[in-house]
Structures are given as structure tokens and as C-alpha cells.
Amino acid sequence: MLTPYGRGESAGYNGIAEGDVLRAMDHVQKAYNVDPDRVHLTGLSMGGGGTWHIGLRYPDRFASISPVCGVVDMDLMPWTAGWSPLDRELMGLTGYSRIAENASNSRSSSSTATRTTP
Image (cartoon, rainbow, N blue to C red; front, top):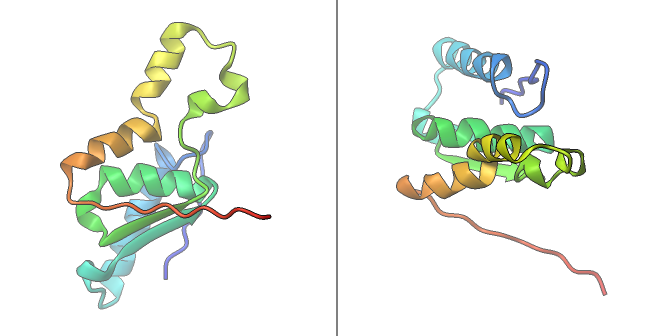
């Protein structure tokens, strides 16, 4: 099990953090006898966002991805309310909903679980 921490100026495991994760994976796969068909990616909160980002950008590297509590789209966050229409559109191009929508071009399946309390 590899548990890299995403560093950098912003959450989401893009940029420097994305490179860190991929380099760490490459190192572990060279150092150990890793079956490439059994590599799975998961993360919680910021790691859930990173799971969406990295898992859907590099689908050939993972047997599955399981994002947990990952941010869906930054434009849903309250601090983006004052953004200009152009900023909102540009952020939307890289939002996880758009990335997940594009995943329909890959072999994938999804499931959703909800819990309600009486």
C-alpha cells in the first residue's frame, strides 16, 4: 500500500502533487513485484479529489478508482460566488464533473451509496 501526501499550493493532486504520486507509484512498482492489473486508487476528502483527478487522467494505470468525499466541482464551493463568468467557465473545464463525464469514453462503471437516518 502506498499513501503519498499531495503537496503544493492547492488541493486536488494536480501539478507538483500529481507528479509526486506518479513518481512514487513508479518507484514502488520497480522496487516490488506489483501486478499492474491489481493497482487500485482511493482517497478521502482531498485525496478523493485527487482520486478523481489522477484516476481519470491515467485510467490505464488503475484497475479501479474509489473516490470518497471528493469535491465534485470547485464552482460549487461558497467562495467561488464572486468569481467572474469567465473564471467560472475556466474552472468548470477542469471540474471533476466534466472529467467524470469524459470518463464515459473509457471502460468504467460507477455506483452510489447514500445513507439516510430516521
